[in-house]
Image (cartoon, rainbow, N blue to C red):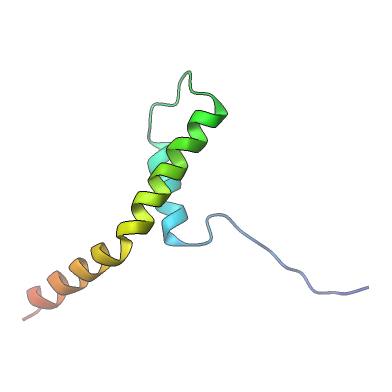
Length: 67
């Protein structure tokens, strides 16, 4: 018997965390689980598609403000 323990946690990255926070802050009253999943997936895809650009802009603005 192995003593190895593999813990997987959610969210496992910033994109999942941001998509979850976005979904959590929506008005979910009356939404079906499928509709909630669609909100999450849509948020995840939008964040994932834009996270590199957003990160670059923040780093650029931060480096310019320190000059």
